[in-house]
Image 1 (cartoon, rainbow, N blue to C red):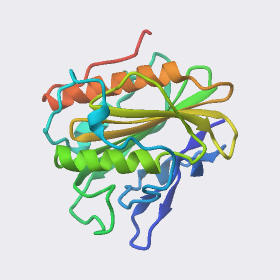
Image 2 (image 1 turned 135 degrees about the horizontal axis):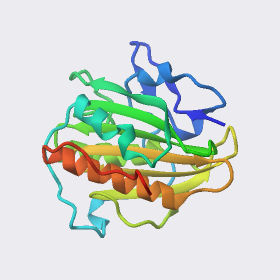
Image 3 (image 1 turned 45 degrees about the vertical axis):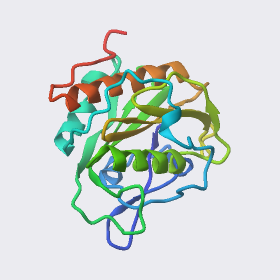
Image 4 (image 1 turned 90 degrees about the horizontal axis):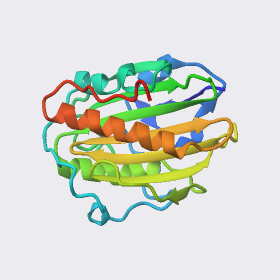
Length: 237
């Protein structure tokens, strides 16, 4: 069982981000995932969305205004950050974004780069999909976080309590509507970067693994935003 994050092709040739429920299962098409998500879909019509970042209980995370390029995002997603034995189903891909976001979009307004990757666990019983969207400032990143929190959810997902990761985060559990397998997802903001990730498992949702992966990605992003090479890793755990 392998799932991928499907992308539609917009009329201008660019890929559109689609709802999490539209993932395909049992197909390996990594080339499709190199398309860049530039248009908003499903904004404001999905499951419960955090109304404001101000409700986050975590205040210790630095809220960096530094910008991040695609090459830096790609380094954040490197396999070295994953648990030992995990394999890349889809290598990190994406690109820097030119200022051609549709005027009607709120997801990609101010976006400067995008990268995504997918990794399979050691047992072959699950996988995690991760996407990173970089913005030109904290305000546009906050707006992107709110929009992605809506479009990354299914209407039947249930918001769950997890420690705040990054500057703001929301976590949900649900089921892949194609395979029926449990899914745990999280959208978070770390400075000027918005992260959307989901862990799918054939048996039961693995919220602890998702939390560990999210915390590691947040730490790697914080290192990158400080101008450092990301070294945080789950290897050996």
